[in-house]
Image (spheres, one colour):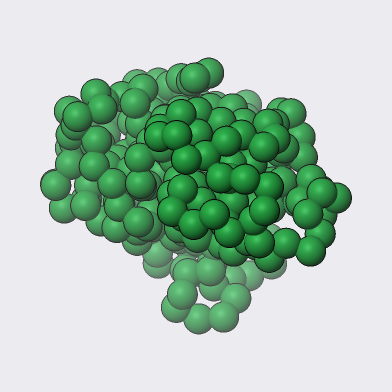
Length: 272
């Protein structure tokens, strides 16, 4: 099964992708949007993208890409995030990592390295590679990244602000692989409307049927100011009659817009 995720090798996305594909079948892209585009275009069987971190919240590029491209969500992968400070020595001047990793380690960095410059790069693994190539740069990533070559040492482990730090990833697939089975469902709804009580009307069909909504998030539609797309996660499968009935009500409210069923799926926890 050919899969694509955020690169280079060694990112947390890469570690999550290994749960669904063999190492030799994994390719890399530098942005979430390019991953979703490649899967939607049929270049890959699966793509793995980060959706939400327990500290920093949702990954907005992922939400926007799921609203733009027609793909299916077929699995949720949850993995703990263990950040380490990696460098050739203690004499670095810059710490480079993904913006979310820098934010997840904010307290540690402010306390231990208040005068060191922080540089946001495309991925944690890219920051580690910069550190491997340049002794003036340190990276933040999984401590195992120091094992890929002898240039780096682990200066500090578990530097994330909270021990409960974890990230949800979605395994996405072409639309023909969309499933109605699984304990969770993700929808994207664009009602193309704005009036008092609209959000309440979008929520009530699920509450009325005792469906737990684990996440509701709005993102700008890009069409006009104050116009939103809603991302909804449910603890119910698309095969359930109560889910089907609730979505039909949502579609009625969104008759001038659209509702996309991304699919039902189960959750896998990856501890590695």
